[in-house]
Amino acid sequence: MTAGIPLAEVFEAYECCRRHKRGTHNALAFELDYEANLVALWEDINSGAYRPARSIAFIVERPVKREIFAADFRDRVVHHLIVGKLNPLFERELVFDTYACRVGKGTHMGIRRVERFMRRCSRNYTRDCYILKLDVQGFFMSIDRGILYRRLEAFVGEKYSAPDRELVLGFCRKVVFCDPARNCVWRA
Image (cartoon, rainbow, N blue to C red; front, side):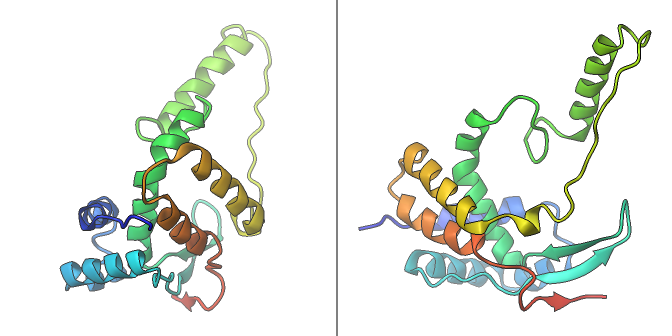
């Protein structure tokens, strides 16, 4: 039998999730009855009934014009639950020079590191050196979800030994195979 996710972990994931999203319409609606919403989410997760909701789609203009698909707040809680369980395992595998979405790292640290490399490469700015900055257009939307899930499944199978492993894989599968562009709600 698969072990369940403790309710306390769902509440912890909620606390992490709400830190930077408290002012959003989605978060405010969830918080109106957050305890009941979290208990219902916990029951859905443990029963296998959890399904991601429709995403909210909108366009941002800065720094470049792009389409954004934002997960429903309830789904964001699940994302934080997944991160809380699997991120320590990912952290052990990542190379040092990975900065996005990592505690204690980020844009400023990455910039300082690039500056150090530039200073070294250019011999204290006395020689030319070059940096390649790029963005793969539509990268995340074009990821092969089957390959991603198989790799995640193998990784979790090898590295994650908690009794709730099958349950975690179950809701990871639902998140990975959820297409946020399908049946989304457009916001102007």
